[in-house]
Image (cartoon, rainbow, N blue to C red; front, side, top):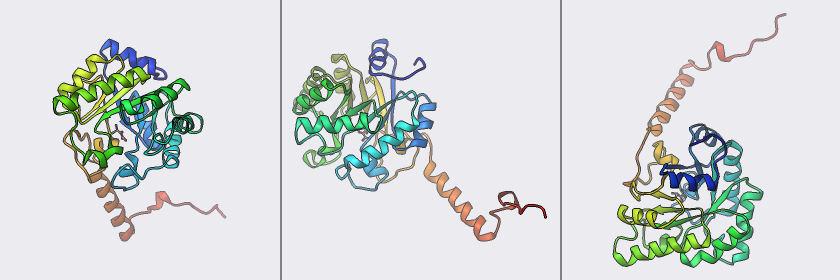
Length: 272
Ligand code: KIV
């Protein structure tokens, strides 16, 4: 990836060159600085923050205000990555005009570069209106966690021919509506590859195999910080859970035994 700000145009060029796109979720200023420094191309302020930061059982309770606060923090810590903000449940289902207004807040107030919406053909008019307002939209198909009550659980989508066809047609409908990329979550690798070959916009997989144009993971999963759920598609690159418990236990011991603070952590009075 060349230096400089990542744009939706650059992501499309990456797909054309066959260069993989890296995406991670991010919810705060300090982590944004680290991920940006590591050269991750897209930081997704996912509504997964409802589960990994706020302790909800699903993403449904997350509000516009929650998302705006965290998107502002991520934008402040990001120089080069494209910042995409998830539109939370019920912020784009009421009317097209309310959806455009809510999407606009992410760019105008929170400094995001784009928004993400879950759904296919049924939200195509909304996607088009948001895109027409100059707000780039990322789609999200397959397992769409905001529809968890309708889907009946966190399970793989598009396993049979009929449901696979629906996902493929939804991808084409989103492309026609103007999305710049599509997240494919928890779908068979064969289907993800087929969608990737049929659309011109990049596909970003999570639990969708290696045939997508890019990959996304929840940062807490990658770092081993969140253990309430452990999906098969997660690869852990660190065990920060363990390291944090060890560090905090050591701090507790040092304070209890008078080892911390030491002389080097203390201030002197002025001479005389
Ligand atoms: O909310 C989220 O983190 C997401 C990703 C898992 C794609 O939507």
